[in-house]
Amino acid sequence: MNDAAEAPASTPMARRFRGYLPVVVDVETGGFDWNRHALLELAAVPLDLDENGLLVPGETASVHLHPAPGLEIDPKSLEITGIVLDHPFRFAKHEREALDHVFASVRAAVKKHGCQRAILVGHNAHFDLNFLNAAVTRVGHKRNPFHPFSVFDTVTLAGVAYGQTVLARAVQAAGFDWNADDAHSAVYDAEQTARLFCKIANAWPSPLG
Image 1 (cartoon, helix red, strand yellow):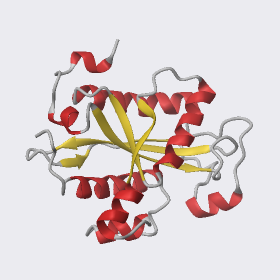
Image 2 (tube, helix red, strand yellow; image 1 turned 90 degrees about the vertical axis):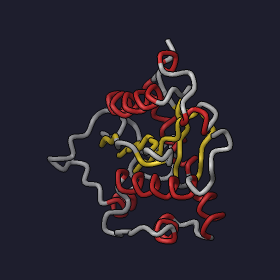
Image 3 (cartoon, helix red, strand yellow; image 1 turned 180 degrees about the vertical axis):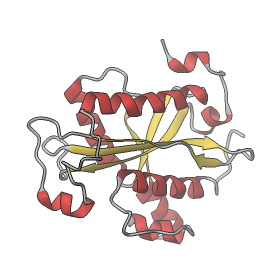
């Protein structure tokens, strides 16, 4: 059964993006090759609407992951992200359980807004989508709420709006603070990207009201 079938047929969010719910995603990984390197962190921020009909970040869902068997981790990636794989408070999940955790939150948001499915928003969005799709394929997940190839990319949007393509600079150009010590965490980067996307999108009124 389609989760959106029980929700209102036409909501402001569903009208805003043709039935898609924007969900900001960030991943931290063991490298750049989604078929070879492990997915290590995943965060998703479904967007919501405030009382004035403006886009705002919703509740973040996040998870740390155990590296999937057979995949590689480049030590240089761990130096950048600061991820300690055997940290006692990392509380990592295996890929199937991790996807179930995040997807359940996304599906609930899709249902809440009467949307048909989620569309991934990211900074260099196809990087995040490719790692997500690779994990979905590895575990044979049948309830992926995201569109398989369409995205909203804040690199493009920030380049048009502010002349900036680096996330830190784009966030600052949008008027927000950026803490370099917190960067390269999936939660921090996803939440900052969500703020950036909302700031840009809210500058454009919905064509459908």
